[in-house]
Image (cartoon, rainbow, N blue to C red; front, side, top):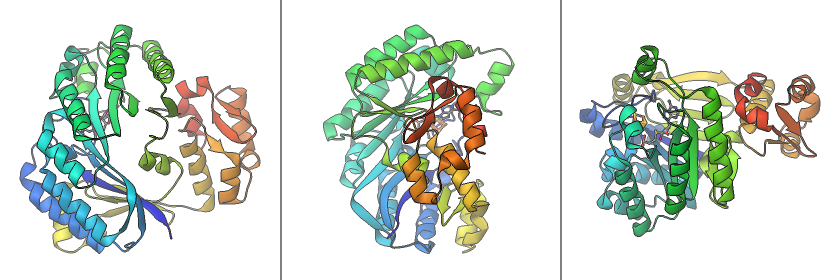
Length: 377
Ligand SMILES: C[S@@+](CC[C@H](N)C(=O)[O-])C[C@H]1O[C@@H](n2cnc3c(N)ncnc32)[C@H](O)[C@@H]1O
Ligand code: SF4
């Protein structure tokens, strides 16, 4: 039977961070009770029931800003309608200001076994510049509390390329990471999203971002220092201790199927990529009116050719790249022959390397990954 992942989207935050354009709202707490009931109904209505669930990812927004009993209700519903593996990886995203001992204990009790905590930066000036609601001390308090409660798989999110960030920040960050010793670190390069407060501040020259060269220098510094400390760089933005890669995300990059529930949640199932609409009120109304299909937007029904290209694009996000034997097993074709033109071009530009059994990003390709991915769009 097919193994799938499940993604649950919680679109609520205490305050919108200045860089963030995820579908999340800071002024719609009154919608939470109805929203939870809608997600439960959406799960119940799903036609892929009884599938084996390998991973559950509760993301947002800030899932930790709602009552932990709601999270329990949703997990109970998933367990009722799907066949959740006993050792399933169950992750929840946490903003440090929104979690306390009681919440963390509840998460543990209901079977959550992986936490992803948004640290972003350790520098108080930067945290303030990007509109975070917490300090680094708040972050550490939650992190060590989680450890005390017994969480053995914790990710921390950080962003590079933030206003006034520099190499000294990176050196200090590495020292702190060494003390924290998380199992997983996500190092995101800032995406300056149009329409965000930070975008406007940069446009108005009220904030200055580090130059590209400095951003890349910070990235390579963090990469090398994490590797020295035993982290495996397994995806362009992700590092994990041995045995702790994010199963949920890794499966997505290997084109495995997942179902998303909640507003704006994306799904990939039966060769179709689709998502729910982003309008919270409409999403709720459609579910209450039992018009489930009206919440869905189909993005792509994949032909074999689209699927093969996408497999390359996703695989080239991972550091080990696309395994030639796995591609052959899946598509009964050799990717080197199928994508000969693209591969030769990228090889000539020194953006990818090809080994006995893999096609993967070169060091230059890691810095210019967008150009590589463009070839497979
Ligand atoms: C849904 S948030 C994580 C949980 C929680 N909401 C928080 O912020 O602490 C997912 C992560 O995406 C990253 N992120 C969000 N917007 C980004 C952007 N514009 N550029 C780079 N990374 C971004 C942040 O590191 C953030 O922690
Ligand atoms: S980064 Fe996290 S807390 Fe900040 S607005 Fe985005 S989802 Fe909310």
